[in-house]
Length: 112
Image 1 (cartoon, rainbow, N blue to C red):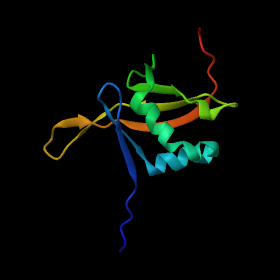
Image 2 (cartoon, one colour; image 1 turned 60 degrees about the vertical axis):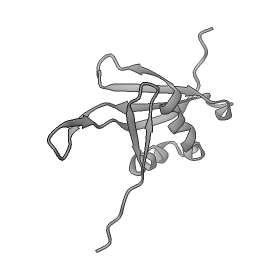
Image 3 (cartoon, one colour; image 1 turned 135 degrees about the horizontal axis):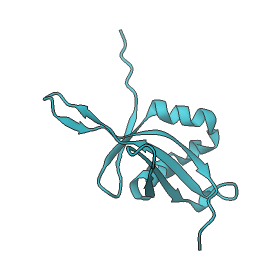
Image 4 (cartoon, one colour; image 1 turned 180 degrees about the vertical axis):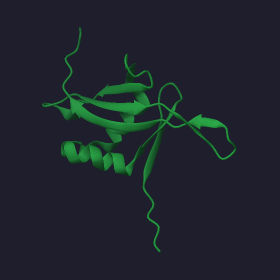
């Protein structure tokens, strides 16, 4: 029996939180937004160095966003939705389990 392993990208945000994106989620995002395919590194960079905003109704959900000129003219930002949770490890202790749910490209007008 052949065991398939799924690829997973792990990054840390500006606040030191470990967040992962699975290959399954990346393919799910690309199904609806195939134009993002060449921008995996920018997608991960959005989590690493972008700004984030906490959802007011779902306090464990954060929206990360970062501007990229190479998305122009249709879009200028990548937006990534991350869920912050915990899970039990092998010793019965809680550990972070923060993961990407979805993301997209969007045009955001500067508030200057």
